[in-house]
Image (cartoon, helix red, strand yellow):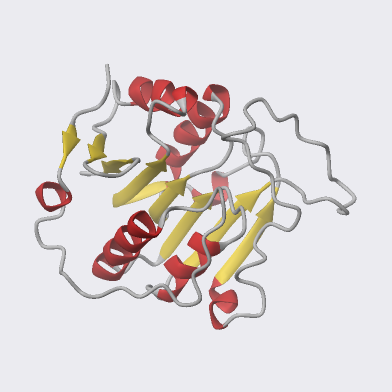
Length: 207
């Protein structure tokens, strides 16, 4: 079953209405739309996480802005890029959802926020996340949209999230059935909500 839809104010009643600017934001296909990125930044600004983990760096636009609106160390994982000795060609199953950048993280390179960001290379399905166990305050899953990847990333992130932490999934929508299937499955174990007027799903750890 689809997860229940709630308004942002229902889930974050104390969230302020601070104006969040998106410095040098440049939309490209595959990026979070500005209204969703703005919302994530407002939540990061409100919660002030110490450690953020992002599955799927892509161009690094979201990475940079989450760093900008927090003092967190931001970890972001993506596949080895072309030219790297361990690069392996990724099969594109769905050209609409599986967008593969030639230079992941290009948008945060040589920026003030880069000092907060740690780029990790590897396949998230077989990466050892044990060093992050129960230590991540804020996480975003927005990588490979195929069911097996999303389910694996979800299982991993739930072992990484700190008590009271928060997990977001992007592309919780009918155009990404793999994401919906995995999130719906995980919602049988932990509470997950869909944020109204977005393609974001969210889990708030209540430990």
